Image (cartoon, rainbow, N blue to C red; front, side, top):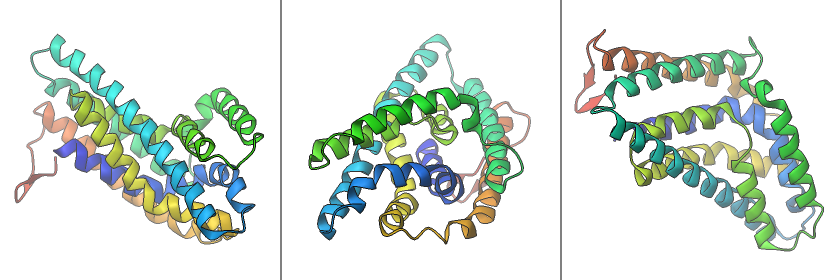
Length: 238
């Protein structure tokens, strides 16, 4: 399914620049109890539970997006015009995010700074409790998934086009899994206190996000019949 592939790629590409830049302070905050642990398995377990919680939230939000997509499909005989609109919206979001990763424009997250502040207060209250509970780590991961994020919102738009709660939940799970390689690395480096390599990824990530945005724009135009679809073998690129 094309949305699933696109969501996986969005997670992989977006995490290279956007997540590294935006989520490094969050990772430092959430990994504070792990940094205080001397036992390596305890530190790794804390980070694993954090990401399991984050992916659980993404899957739940994806299911809700799929319900919305299903309602839209019941309203219209075909989702194709809606999918074209969503693809063009995604193209705009990804293009803007590429500029934000490159440092040319402010990040989208500035639009909901107040909500981000409330999220930070909730996390600090949770961190004030004893850090020995695995439930605490998983709960913090669930909160992490609710952090206002332009990339997550873009992924939810794409997940909604599946028109099915289970497919959308699976797509958002793939999106989360796509972010894992980079975010897990950032988390481990945060635990070790070494984040000097992150700036090297920013320009490459901005270019990849821009290319992905162009692909989504072409897909939206093709859905509206303005440009022909293009296939590479058995895969429709747009």
